[in-house]
Length: 220
Image (cartoon, rainbow, N blue to C red; front, side, top):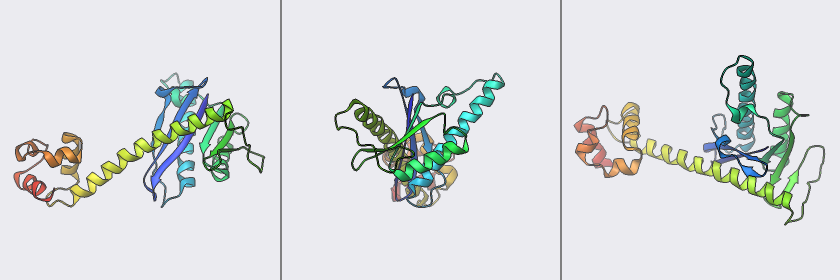
């Protein structure tokens, strides 16, 4: 079981993280997980990676407690990886090592970081990266998993960025506060659908009034 983690953001905004899981070289998509990163202050990928890994292994601890109490557990977090792979270089590797030490898992889980620039693998206790042949099965598998983690994180990031953009545009409309904004997005699903809705359709959203709907039509 290999778990790979990646962070996606633009200058620290709408930061998201991904956890993808491969078992015996095959994606186990039911165990994929996305993380909305909460603690990043600006474009700090290290902080984002630490938050995501801390949350992942806290969920593992919770799963152990649930198992002890015969409660239903989340298998995506209950199972530990044989290999933890992070997207990045020495810095990301150091973050992952520190997190595993906090959870006393350093001797349980192998760890590596795959840097994009030269596709080098960084591993603990080695100052120089491991350079695998470009067509080696091991490197190709690591690249495939890393690219899947990047794709999964980027998809979530784009969704979050779209929601934040819709929120900011709706907040600029007179008569549209947080409650109505949420009601509109829940009813229509996207800013584009709100923009193309008729006045009567806008009034169908929960809590909408005619003056607020008219403001929407004028501004959007």
